[in-house]
Length: 139
Image (cartoon, rainbow, N blue to C red; front, top):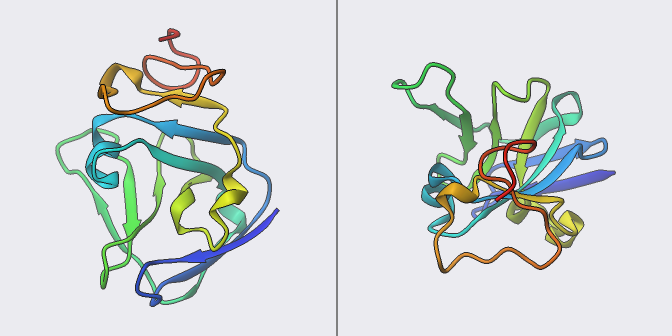
């Protein structure tokens, strides 16, 4: 799979090659902040196949956590591009909405962190749900 995408203002562009190891919708409280309230749709792609082709991101990681997620975003328009999680080394969690063709996301394999899901957030029928991350207790 070869994908390209970028931020809202166009100053940050990327390409990624490889096969996703996970397609999910995350309902954790942190993703609610990033998405503006909804679930966050991510493709876990091999880090080795990812490269910025135009511009460079600004990064953020919380300093109050022992193993924080690093989030990369456009410093001009604020669009979040990806996250890097210590729990998934070697992969980037690429946001589906920044793809030039968001339909490449397809269907989520799982809905995660349903312990934080809000009443207005929806999980499609047939998508398995987990209280925390994949492999945790079913929700």
